[in-house]
Structures are given as structure tokens and as C-alpha cells.
Length: 122
Length: 109
Image 1 (cartoon, one colour):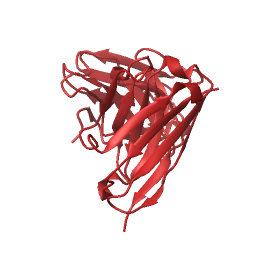
Image 2 (image 1 turned 90 degrees about the vertical axis):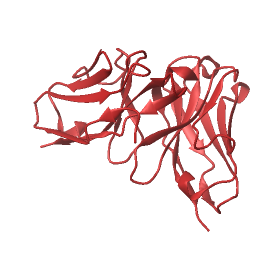
Image 3 (image 1 turned 180 degrees about the vertical axis):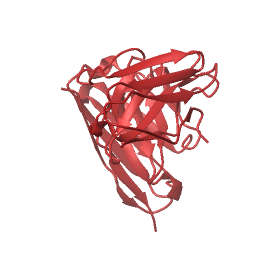
């Protein structure tokens, strides 16, 4: 059974940093691209970042480019999102999602975690 | 404004067939496979279709199709548990990013 378990969310002041983690199990992690997708309160889904199976291809939404860094550790079956210079508009539930192929450029997802909440407030 | 356009709301009665649409352009839906995601009561999204594939555990009353730059998710034999928000996504070549629709709220009357 595929499982994706996010952690690392919490309350953070504007301008500060936070690191999210996603622990994956139930599939061959290093065969697939992985993504972060967020959902602000009362809003729809927004893609944040994606990374290919071997970290050779990485992409970011314009809204987070230069502030967020995605990475993965295939030995640990884990995905990460380092979030710096956080803003109020980054406040959302952050989901880890498994891509359907090895590259993040396919734009579709087949499994999702339960999400971790990031609250940005002073 | 979302790159993909979905109806804000759709409703149907139990047993009815309903179709949700997702409209894009040649840079996205016209060129790439589409995924559909169900989100019940603001819980985690669940994939109900990607490309022409029905994920394991999803009932076969769900089906997907695409014509030109519009993708559709059809639910045949609507059930009360199908009431949810539904989102579509695909890759957008011009944006170099995955894009989502704004979501459709499906109400089962």
C-alpha cells in the first residue's frame, strides 16, 4: 500500500524558514517523480514544486521560485521542501504527491499524503 | 485565475450520470494526459483517474475522456459518497509547470 506521510508544518513568523518532509513507502521511491502541492484555506489546489526520480530535473511555481528548494533522498525514501522567506500567502496545507512517471513534467499525480499545515503569522 | 477551467458546481441525483469538464488549450490538455482528483470535505485529494487509467480501488462508474482541449470525467450511477470537490490537472508546455483547474463542487441531491 502506497503511503505518503508529511511532517514539519507549524506556525512560523513571516520571513522565517521551515522544512517539510515526506516519508514514502509501499512503492519503489526512486522510480518516480515527486511533488509538493498546496491548498490555501478555502482555495483550490496549487502546484508548488516537483523533482524527477534522480533529482536531475526540478521545477518550481513562479510564486515560490528563489525561496523554496525541493530535494529528495532516495536512500531514505524521503522528499523535502525547504521554505525560506515565508510570506502570509504561503500559508496552506502542503501535500506530498507521487508523480505517475519518472519525470516531474507529466503533470499528473496518483497518490497523495494527508498534508501538513503551514501557518505564517506574526 | 486557473489555467484550466472547470464548472464551479454541478449537481445530480442518485443513479444519474453526470459529466464534469476541464477546458484548457493546445499547450496543456490538447497535448498531455489529464488527471482527476476527488476531495471530500476538505480531506486529502484522491486520484480517481489519470490519463485513461482507473486507479486501483476506484469504482468503474468513473470514466475519463478527452476531445481536443477539453477533458471530461463522467460518473455513471451517481452515489451519495461521490459528493465532493473535483479537480483536474495536466502539464502546461508554455508555463513549464503542472496546472490545476479551479475545481468543481459536485452535489448529490
